[in-house]
Image (cartoon, rainbow, N blue to C red; front, top):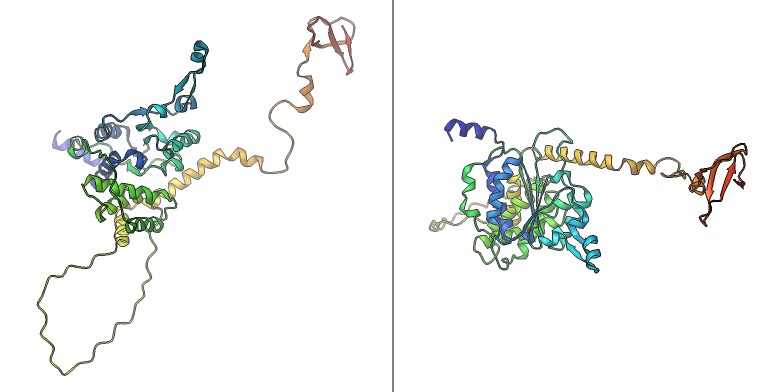
Length: 397
């Protein structure tokens, strides 16, 4: 590629290099513990996903099953069930495995996740809770589109996925990312390194400080920290692992900034009285290390540094978009709860229910005043009782 083409390609990318590096790191962590971390929610262009797909496949174990889930899939194909045709031919119940059962312990890929209905999201969330599969949601929405044009997947499903990767401003992927050796075979096996209570306390405190209401977020961040420690070859979760997990898991979920600490201007301490005695010889200068900050403060700083400047504008737009979608789906139900209740329901009127089995007479009698409406006897005979005009009593034709 020429230098001019490279510059033109870089101008079309609105994503910072750190965002792409974090996305590749999230893919490595996900490949280390796919079932425990739930999955990935990837928001990018279709061309970018086609370039990222080989990277994800290279990071995952080769024996891991991969299945694609259509948006219009039914419950029989997704969950499995009885095959009626095969059961009738075999004379016994024949059960067919569903897509979730076929990909047990593997990865389900769903593209166009923003157009997913709530019923499919509930089935997939149930499979994630049972730790049957991992999930890769691909949303092809673009940043800056008009409100309502970029729907998001249901929140209960995305809440179960550890990593939310937003690359909507990326139009092309640098070719060097395709040959990243760190992504090949990055999946780690065996048990995850343990983490102490201080790490979990710091992650939970950061989750509360940034307005993350879900209790799954700190738990997923803890598993991501364990995966980062496993990739680094550590026996236990270190501070760097906790900071990496907080930046990748808690950062995209943030809805507010931590409250500012009160600025209490304390009075300066009084100066010590001057003494007539000569001061002692100063100790020899030694390089003393600076005191380390608490882990809670380090986690807060890591998440705060990962927040994009347009975060809150994007959150407000998505909140308005979700409220608009719920208003459209619930308008019919809200209309039924308004006004004075009436006994009218869709279907046949209740007064006409008894006359549904009436049929027009095939042999109307001429000159007898017969209205031509009759009902067949239950015995199946040709005798018919015709209802005369203006009379509820019938007479035989």
